[in-house]
Length: 387
Image (cartoon, rainbow, N blue to C red; front, side, top):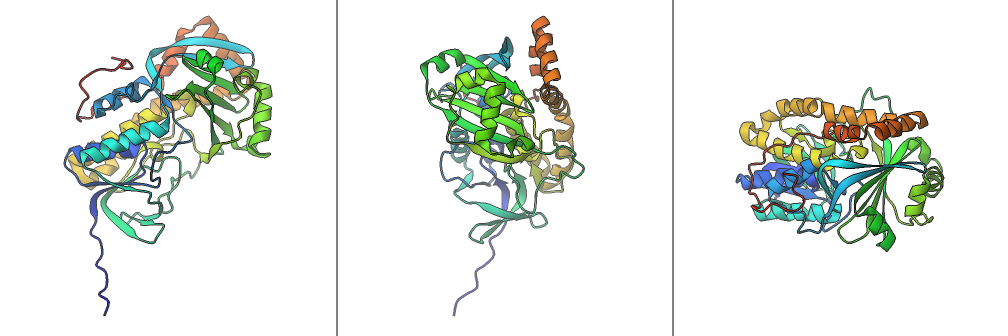
């Protein structure tokens, strides 16, 4: 006679998503002695559609977590090159930034979580969640419950806990990413630089990665995708000839994409026992370059809130994060909408030509304040340290 299986007791903290937000939460909890379970649908290194740029606020949090991105090969970035058509303006960033692939960054953070004692459940795809039970169901039908659920699935929705976009009038955007092979001229022009190419209803960011390849990320309005990526890129390359030059006139063959990106969205509320972190809590326009910092910051501060107040702390923490993200996301939205049309792009370039210091001020206003991690520090400062 087969004995019925016993239900698995809830784990103290269940984190769904192994990106920067989820890993930062797992590191913080595990170092405090909590049995944090981190679920990641990928079983090994992988690239994300968004990310690659690490602002000075992100670098500060990573340093506090004990991660030296210089050791990982991150490329220092000190300047921004803004391009509209044939026009280009170069601006100094307020502090040192860096370029690093998500493949390398995410693996390093997950390794830190494992070293701290977090239980890593890799290669496990979560298909649905039950908010009332704070549980998730995997592809194979297995279920796992947590005393507290940290939702860190990035821009991807989880059935049962999808973001509430009710009342949102703007159609979400589409994110695209391609990797350009190492190229001597491109590497020379992008060394120490991040390029931002503005075009009709979208923009593209380009930076060097640790292996010499270039990371190309685009954000475009969904209505521009009606004829597919090749047709879209042909249009963009005609609008942005300097970007076409960077591509050598050829459209990359391989693309990663994520649809339905609700830029400007912030989670205003939650229920006890569910923390929405990273893009599940706030989605900043990628042209601001602060997505990774917000992910790290929210992961660390959510874990700290849980350590101080348990599952009930989620409600107040989410409200506080909603307010804390208001200024940087509002500023990023103003820049995104301003750059979407020809008139706004022209005015932006003219203003920056007259008053280049405005660029640094805008960059500072789109930063989120970094929490103190209280975690193990690396001791030595890296060359990328803004301090």
